Image (cartoon, rainbow, N blue to C red; front, side, top):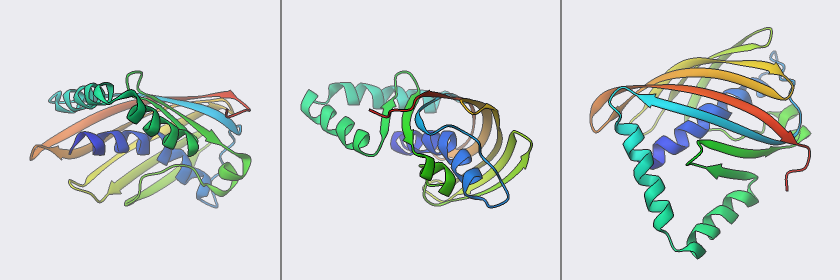
Length: 177
């Protein structure tokens, strides 16, 4: 699994579980529209993933400022502000996005979600090189906060790897600018 896959995966786990919950007819997701900050921490058994993220951060810092700004502007135009150093991503969610389940998610993943009150249990399998699968839960604390955890397995440098993720989300404000 390369560093780009790791970053995509982390965003998918943070955002994908909530987006699928909103899209399912029998599940209800009561969160506020506006600017959300999704924070996460990941820990791998081998430490290899953490080293790959650190390398990606160093490469991003070495980009000329104009290229880094261009990447940030492209993401911002899609409503995403990614802070890799702080392990967070800011995403703008409209009322229509939430109602329709049009939230950012990882392509190539199949998820199963069940709801028990304000807790969403999920499992997922994702195609990719290498593929990965796992399970976790999200607890919606109120319409402005959630927390959760997940565990997934994949292969890194040809070796099996288990990664633990803890995540939190908080609503920041109505305006996304």
